[in-house]
Image (cartoon, rainbow over all chains, first blue to last red; front, side, top):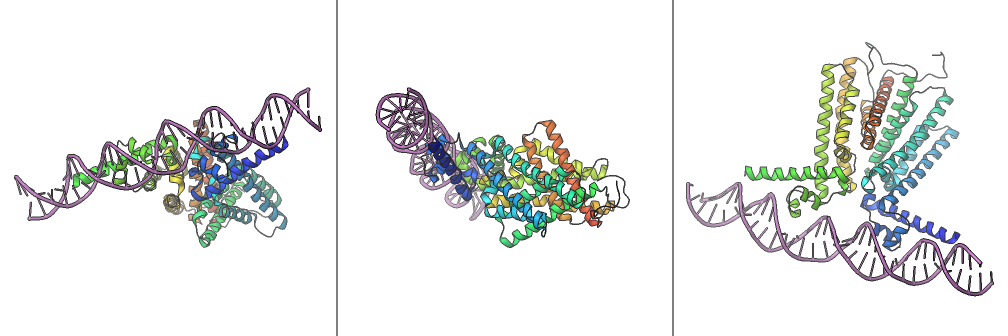
Length: 215
Length: 215
DNA sequence: TGTACATCAGTGAACGCGCGTTCACTGATGTAC
DNA sequence: TGTACATCAGTGAACGCGCGTTCACTGATGTAC
């Protein structure tokens, strides 16, 4: 029982890996069941022993990729929290960008370029990004406590930061290295603006002179 | 000469319209040349008289859709600037969301779900979004001047706002109306955090060190 | 104005291709006793 | 332990289908004189 089940899992993973490899070329949405099976060294019909259809495999991929990216960024944050020499913002974003750079096809998958973009698919992607926001909320609150810099609307700020990082980070995929560095700086600066806004609001700070009305 | 050229333009537009109509169902990336031609009431071969291939038509669509969305939002902003009763932020975002809602297939096209997501395609979309940022920078600067509330990093702040609006707005597509309203509020709140951050930075405000007074 | 010729948007037949899916099968692994 | 049977991952042939693209064509519109 064990041997057979293990073998099946191996084959399943081979299909997922094959799909990732192929999606590097022309994007996930250009993949076909037959091409994936072939890349994995299987007959087309074997695909059905592991997935119901292409969308099903796509959803499994989103899970897998999202999880590994979150793990990476979490590690990076933990590293700065202990060493305390670098900025958490900077290291998180740089780790994130490195992933986007070296695994651009995975990254693109997380951005929604997949499986004909069915509602299910988009929902799965939304969930992944929410996980990121969850992580960040926790971090921001811990940081606010530690540094005695109160923050407000933490979840909204975190969502805005993650959205900016993900979607501007996406632009890096087609950029030459030097421009990519500039993009990273831009993203970091924007995340800091959001941070400052949330802190200013928490402190009750309001913009100057003839003021009374918001906005 | 005029009559023939006019007719050709009409047919070309019919192909673009047909593509838009069809992309409402299964997304742009699922379209085929034959299906579009059929929807437009033409033989498949006629397609080639107007576009080189599907990607070519996709790029033309991005241009068209981006332009019309920008026109819409610009109008909305102008309306508030004169009437001055409502918040510019609110009306801009609400107009934007209304577009995303009623023309969700066009909107999705602008988010990159198209034409196999070739580099050219992504570049075209990046350009469209940059146009939005350009518009917003101008607005923010005019507003800062008018209300005497200095702002800094205007371009970065604008880019962050547009990114948040576009990409969170995208989530509205699959949402029921009541949740969609909550999403709009969230987006507005996040845009305001960014705004406040840029104003706080301009004013030289910094978060309090291990604090002095209770609040 | 009328005539002869050029242009060119739209066509229909035909092509080869890769696609997703079905089906009945094989043979190794697992299970019951 | 050995035997008989069940399970099930992987297969190869076959299907019908819609695809993009080519080609030589038609006939209306435009142009030169």
